[in-house]
Length: 330
Ligand SMILES: Nc1ncnc2c1ncn2[C@@H]1O[C@H](COP(=O)(O)OP(=O)(O)OP(=O)(O)O)[C@@H](O)[C@H]1O
Ligand SMILES: [Mg+2]
Image (cartoon, rainbow, N blue to C red):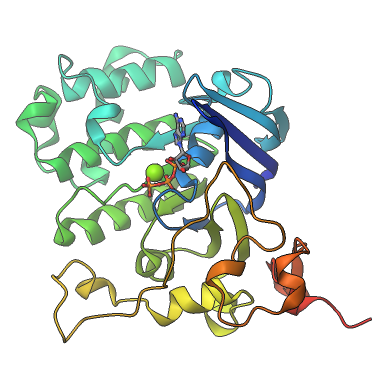
């Protein structure tokens, strides 16, 4: 079952006014596919995840938005709209696996707890077998011993595997992974990404992968949504967006994409890449016209006064972008 998010908008109330963190965000994730939500720091990626999970900070208000998950539509403006889905319909992997783990519980207790909620009909013996099987599936060696270990006895990569094993047992319709590999060693990154893909293939869930790394998206995702200053500027399959970026921002991102294996090396003359000049606009004050106008290299007069709609780039593949250059000529 595919996941659909429509018109999500989130405000944060701050001391000097209201920060509009997200505006009119819509995307679809077909069943069994992984959507990479990519954007600079502060573009609103985690806000999307937290709004879906119902984990937003107290000063946040969802001013509009709905999510269709598991064939039901949830009104995200209603506090706690998706609480019942947490851990069943939706599971989340955070950058820091300790946010999902309780330091005083063993690995086994975490997994058994998920199974107790997800499969209350099973007995303890079969839950133990299912838990050990999940650890083996995420390639945590010696599952029997792991079951009695505490999170602090494991490395960061191993903890993240435990969290993935928990998601595997929860069998969610939607798995949200917010920068799941950012805190890990680069060699562990590909292993963890492979485990997430393995999980998706085993349970056929939709995955929302949040990352600041375009390389991660182009390497592992089926679809991409590009977020900029709280707006989704482009959306499409990775192949289509790479071949014909519809938005100048996406083109610039692709132009300065660093191969994944070089991304974390210190900047030297060998791997220096172009960065896009300028900063994200102030979320308290949206400029009139296109949100990317100030940093765009192909903007024209209308861009300063007309807010672009979401125009198709390639109708047949659901590829669209918010750029006035895509307006059909009158
Ligand atoms: N509780 C909050 N109160 C006020 N502003 C907030 C709050 N949480 C986030 N913001 C602001 O909302 C915007 C989006 O933040 P968010 O954390 O969603 O971005 P992000 O894309 O996940 O960034 P990063 O890549 O650094 O994780 C930013 O401008 C941020 O400063
Ligand atoms: Mg974030």
